[in-house]
Image (cartoon, rainbow, N blue to C red; front, side, top):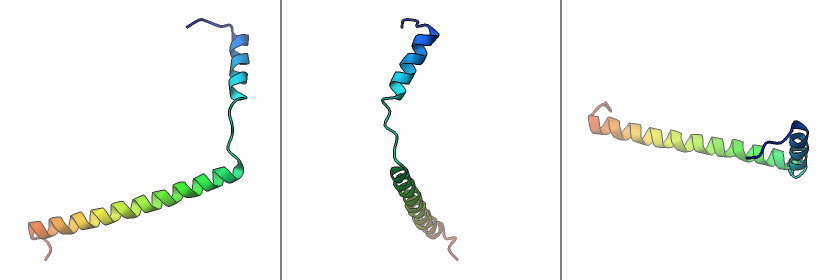
Length: 65
């Protein structure tokens, strides 16, 4: 990789940053809400799986009472 002087590097960085499309406030809010919903659904799913497996193991081992 060719070495560039610091001035050229800064110019290239500014050029690349100008190509970035930043999300709007609305897009950020929608994405954040979707992340929270998916986290909650994933948590509920793993809670259910854990409960089912726990019940099955208790029944198999005879620890269910």
